[in-house]
Image (cartoon, rainbow, N blue to C red; front, side):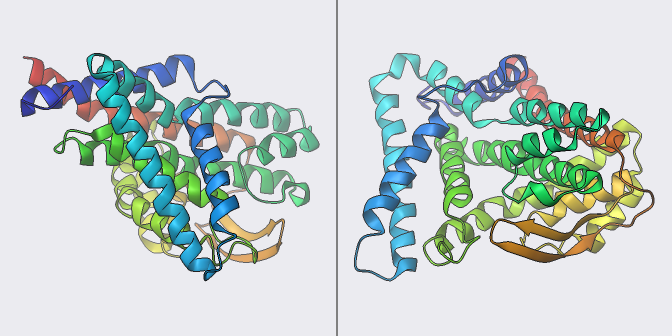
Length: 326
C-alpha cells in the first residue's frame, strides 16, 4: 500500500475504510487483551505514572504525556508498516476496523432499552454506567433515556464520524490509518485524563484541548450528514436543523452540543439539564424544546438516525471506489 501512484493509494484507502465499516457491522468490537485501544490505554497509564512524577508544572506534564503517547503509537504503526509491507493492506483494515465503534455503541444501547421496557431501572442504570462517565444512580427513567440519547449523539461523532474524517485527511499523504490512529490516541487521552475532576484539571488540559481541536470540524459536519439521515428516517429534519443552529453552542464542550442539539430537535425532546457526575452536580443548560416527554421508543429513533446517517457517510467512499474502479 506504498503510495507510488496516487490513484492506487486512493483505491487501497477506500478498500480499507469500506472493509473496516463492514467488519464493524458484522463482527462488532470484541474485547480482548491486545485490542489496539486497550494497548493505547495501557500506554497512557504508563506515561501518566512516570511523567506525573516529574518536578514540572502539571500542564507541562500533560503536554509531555500527549506527545509521548502520540509519538510511540504512530512510530509503532509506521514500524509495523515497514516490517509487514506485503501485508500492510490487511494491517490497515484491521486497525481501521478496531477504531470504528459504531456496532459497539449499538450493542451497549440495546440492553438499556430492554431494561427500560421492563421497568428494570436499576439494571438500566448499570448498563448505562458502562458507556457514560456520570453518576447514573441518581437518574430516573426520563434521565436514563435522555442520557442514552446524548451518548448516541456524542458517539456518532467520537466513535464514527471523527475517525472517518481523519482517515480521509490522511489519504493524500498516503497514511490515512496513521491519522485515524492519532485521533483515537487523542480521544482516549481525553476520556482518561480530560480535566473532568480537580485532580486531573491541569494534567488533562492538553488532552482535552487537543480533543476539542480534533473533533471541531467533524462535529460541525455532523449536522450536514444528520440532516440527510433525518430526512431518510422521516424525522422532523427542519426542526432538527433549527434546534441545532440555535442550541449547538449551549454545551460546555465546543463540539458535543452540535449532534446533541440535532438529535434533540429531530426527536422532539430536551437533552442536557442538571447532570450528576461522581465529583458533583453540574448545571448544564437545556438543549432542544420539550415537544413531548421522553419515551423508550425515542432511543430507538435515535439509533435509527445513527444507522441511517452512518450509511449515508459511507455511501460517499463507496461511490468514490466505484468511480476509481471503473
